[in-house]
Length: 303
Image 1 (spheres, one colour):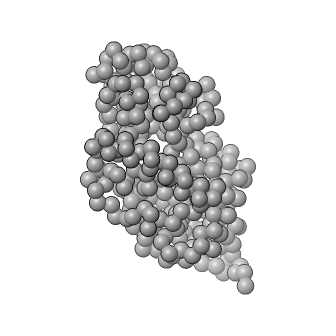
Image 2 (cartoon, one colour):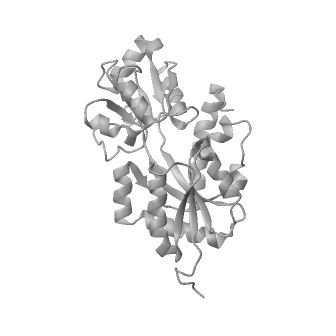
Image 3 (cartoon, helix red, strand yellow):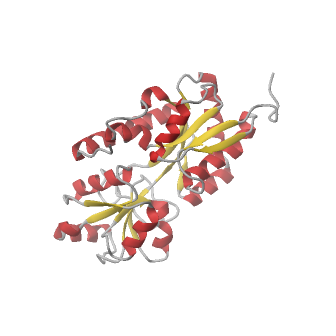
């Protein structure tokens, strides 16, 4: 017998990032629409800290009955297994893939010093001034960090990373000329780019981004090795029955095709995905193939 929505206990989406951020906003969009698709209330539970790893602990401790899922970043499956010697979970055993929610571009931006207007000009400058060729990142061991290594390898300049606490201080350092470039989620750069305070020279995705359609992709510029979208996805705890996973996947697919949801996500700098669980598995595997050799060659460990 189908339960009435008001009689069904609330389902929960765990998010490993604070309220007000983009992950939280996406989880709330999904929760708001999922109540109709799943016929039960859906709430968001922020379990913040450790780059999403605290949320995984909460997911592992949750009932495996479809009542609890997690919206997590790509780093959980594609980076942390190679950056942490001791990880609090096994991505293959503890995270049941439901589906990719949305993907996003990374941007490479410059500020006031050096005074360059194009990617080609930056590359020429970096090769002449390798000691000054550095890049700001919002966190150590994040995809941004390793994109910088890939960029350095592609242009034959060993670029030095400069870690900051989040995007706001990077942008200030870039505009103040303290760093020569930054690698960040492109949506964190677009506002200052449009205001002429910094310039995004290229984005990492296969297609240009709608928020800054004038910015070319690295592939267009002849650097296809500097490519890849970040993504976030829904996961269920180990042991969740297939019908429950399938119900969430169907709900996610439907939500990500809704015009108002798509509009909100694009405005935030995300491209909605909402495909099959298998698509998420393939996406994760592609990200692992991309990042594992880069991380291992870098020798970086987060613990």
